Length: 435
Image (cartoon, rainbow, N blue to C red; front, top):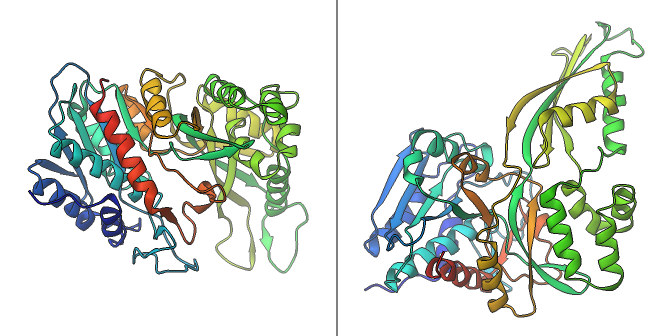
């Protein structure tokens, strides 16, 4: 039998496929993964909504004594345009203990771990209690419409009986108060895109109009920049913060506990500085202005300006809540409309959490697992429609000075080479344990 490639070698090959989305061009990358499966006798199927944008599904048979477990991840990546990289972003250079390249963290590194664990489970002839389904997806970075959403909408029977899934993000190290934590994602915020429309007097650009639509918009943007939306202590966030506080002592423990007092939350976040930025979106709904449309001629003062905003809604809350909060902040001169909402379940199913936490404790006796609410969104929101609870579980031991969140989507995205083996072994343990 041919020796299996190391997870680092799998990742380097995955990075070398330029799957920038748009347009994606994921086919060659997914064909490479399919070839790895073929080499060890694992059959797989390809499903496409759009030609050249495939999704792959493979299955290892278990004894049927447990529900199937789903592993899923995407191979498309975001743009590198206008970024200055130390090494070319699709060369997959290994240097200074890292593998450098677009997708190293988000999420070809995670896919390399999952695929490697899946291959090892086959090689070990592991006696699996339940089937393990591997699903490699396209299009996550642009909404998942031809990836996870397509698979859930048009091929739901492939995932019949699945209760739990492993996906992005979680299991990476987070250092707080001198302690090393491993956040495991149990919930994520809801995508809730909002359009703001502002009206005003129109006219010729040579005759300025005070208080026109653009000026009203400027006032609105200033308010959104300077003020937070109200504090919310949702059940999943409370669970996360209480778990974090229990792992700390002294002043750090006290500060985290005080975050759960809505009267003190914003003050404590400000006192925490850069670390406060990590927790801020877990305690508030947020809106980020991103797309502006106004006049199409430079000499015409527009009668209407529209602004699209990336809204993120905490789990357990509904879109009317964020609309009401933004309206209260910006005033009645602005018309607000929801243009897209992808819901997420309000209450996580914690049934697999203890198993994942124990695996991490065995791998690092000084590490402290804790539940994580993700400020972003993943393909988990689509699988949740089938009643599947996703855990963000791509374990990585990272250096203390490595800023995980600031490295994703940025120049010089990279992953410690050793982290890939750490994560692969942790995922393999999940597959081989009773679930």
